[in-house]
Length: 407
Ligand SMILES: Cc1ncc(COP(=O)(O)O)c(C=O)c1O
Image (cartoon, rainbow, N blue to C red; front, side):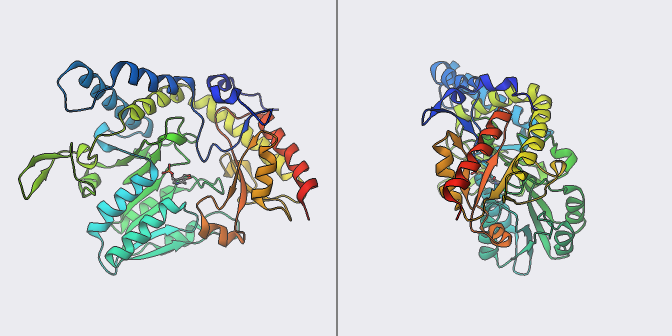
């Protein structure tokens, strides 16, 4: 039995009732709920510090700028970056990956160059590379899923060759819950002079990692999957790699000097942050990291125990097909599964009626779904505030779903 973590009371929304039932929120891979500290940070910012950043010399603007830059430093510390200058604020992982695809790949790749990604990727870490390949004449090669339903790392390594310029891979899969062993992939990519882009959307809140140890060149995260607000995320880049990224948006805040016909870009990271940024959201992301970091070890232990518990309980549901590895050590708290003869959307609707919130669909991973031989799955995912009771309610709900819907 895993104790419900003490964190639960910090998340006001978990007090809600849905259809008269307490909420069992099991969709944290889509977005995490927000602790009170984050909600208050947003309110305090707008009540006390709201002004535009980097433009005013008056007190409020200086305060807003200081909070914005302090949030950048917190993101840098969380990711293990050497300097806040390695952090570009974006709207999220999707925007960060698109920035590398358009601003780096778009201006550097040539026909005949190769991008290597995988069949396991979320569309956000696939479509930008399709677009970059189409735009530059480069080709996109995808590493396949292995027979054990984990990424075939050997195949990925075999795709990295002299024409490879970029390798894009996720650290944690949002469907299989698997964690990609990046060491050899990064070493092989660097040996052929390729850059490595890591999609850490699912990893940033649930895995301890460090960009220096990973030695990746770029890494993308979303604030809203990290207990922070929507609309804010970050791209980490090694300084020399970020220098190679061309701005894809021009406007205020990113220039050093402008003439009628030309302009010179300002220094990083502002060069890649044209326009007024999401200052309050960045500040609240900083508050999310202030909340998470001191609790991280306990949270990870809790999530690991709960992952093992959920796996055991789900695997005991008659007929349930769980995708991905069955051993808890091989996975994070994300479980994609199906029940025989039950459409995932129908199941998710019935479960919602019991206050259990989980996802049904292709999870923005259509190539992976095809490889798994399905069009959609149910997906339950855990976070710091998840409890055994949430898992028990899901499992109990699945028996009523089977009784009502299984053909
Ligand atoms: C692995 C992975 N990559 C990228 C994304 C995209 O994140 P966002 O929509 O926050 O940009 C997600 C979102 O679910 C994800 O799970």
